[in-house]
Image (cartoon, rainbow, N blue to C red; front, side, top):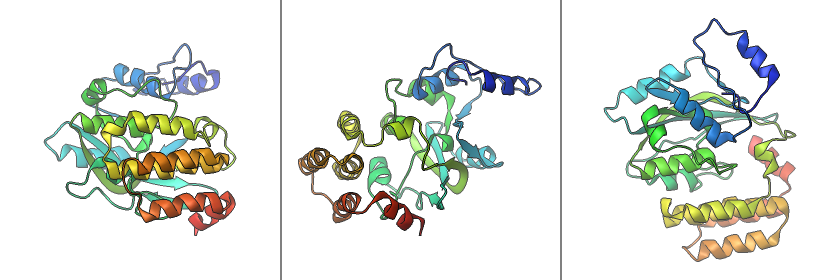
Length: 267
């Protein structure tokens, strides 16, 4: 899937014409969510997996995840795996834990189990999903970010079960100076708050409180906008009682410079 004309990419793909590869080039950029939906509709296999252009799969990625997924009799499943987040400072492997029996998905994803990373994580290039489920619950084409997290929450709400492979099978390359979709939204706490409010019905109160404080408050800190931190606090305390770790993380994002936080995370 090429999301909009890209001559260099198209030439490279033409060199692979001897491979069982179907190339779809959108006439214009449709955005990440809809581009993936178009790819799913064009696919013909029982399972679909995603690989963003700035990520990498380990060679045995699909074999390993499909082994776990096909061991279940259920076809309403979402396959995820551990991820290597690779930056110039360090590699981080996460999530460190699989969901516990009976643990709500939103609490697994959003309640922090450590100082720098949450308990769970959804990243597009770790997903392996039945095509039928993707057709039933497509990506939200209107979202410029949070697309994969939003999709997993809605899929779980529709009855899908998470199958986590506890082995790092994908690499996400994070460049500190990179500009792109993710970097262009740094500090956009207003959009984050709007999205979280719209998906409140998909989260437990504990997960909602944690996500609002850490995500919205953190983005407000990046933008140095105290109004965002205040709105995050008011929204969170209106739903439940914040956990001390979330409050400490929010304060840390305001007090510690970004460079110091990166060094601490690397250590």
